[in-house]
Image (tube, rainbow, N blue to C red):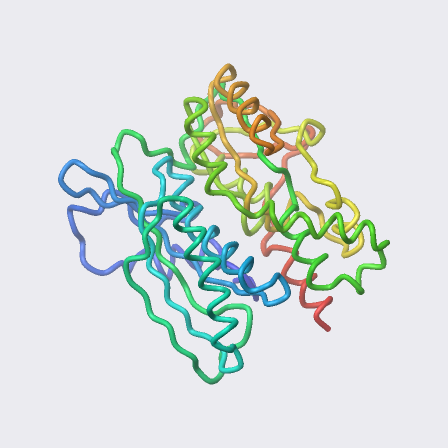
Length: 337
């Protein structure tokens, strides 16, 4: 199992999946590796739910950090095709966090929730010894909608086009440039440009926009393991081949410089805010146009092909495997030292 980050497939299948509590008929979709949300069936409605840790990074500014943290929680529901509607927030804060800092972080969360039409319905807030930044709690998002509107990450179909929004490595670039500006050995101008990538982490609005712009067969966010990791989860889940090229992918300013400076491949590092979508080609074109019209870069980076049921990702003509552990974790440990 990786030393840092998400557990691997084998550990999930051996430890988590066999022991999921009571079996209930209203659980339409339970925990699955590579699927970020679950689904409950209540009357004629689908309740989509997802849980994520909350990370508050003071270097981002507490208000912005709160906004980013909440958006990451909500995105795991948004990629289901059902917009998030409710959220619960549990904050286990370090003792050194002041009331003023808490107020700023909470204002960032609450204001962002309001802008997305999301209500906070429950929570827990406390300070405890032994808690350090940045992992300070967790959140559970919910979305209520029509079961027919659900889009799964494993729904790709042969003939689909593959769309990537925002591009690889933007999240890691923005965070590293903000947290470790003096350790990058880059010009001040390049670092400042790279720091702007923090704003690319927001994904909820893009997921909603993509869903409204065209018919989607699959949608996933490129978090741990990056774009390659996300593609692999989607292809494996659907039992298809993803044939992808790097050249058409959007690359945000500063990504190559920062990722090169810390020795990581932007295609394999966490890229929260970047979405992977599959759709019929004409729908994919409409989605790209809608994204770019809103200011989010996007591109068609490949196609989906049928196989004998084995999922695979071919990148620039070579089959690739997802990283065993996100390289950003090791890079962050090195920079922290």
